[in-house]
Length: 125
Image (tube, rainbow, N blue to C red; front, side):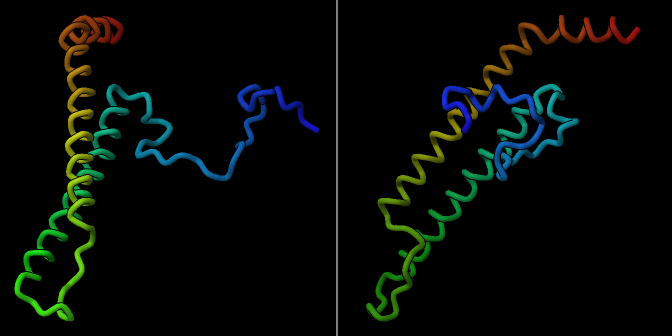
């Protein structure tokens, strides 16, 4: 029986520890490309925000089309008005966090970028 105090991280085997592997937009070869992680994050966040906004818009459209309809002809919206507001707040929060992350990258580029580029140029010679 395995020792329960032994962490899974201490295994030296290259064998996967689970069937599920986290999704990543980047190939293993591209993961170390400068800012690749930020670009993948931007894809995920923007895709999620887009989906939220589509759901909210579809729900609002269904609600507006229901005005004046008989109850048996009412089309149910995808989400309730309360859930639509939650999705909007989520979308606003997600884009704010993405902006914060981008601002950190811009600050690094402004502070370290020129020196980093110069180092890369010198190494290429």
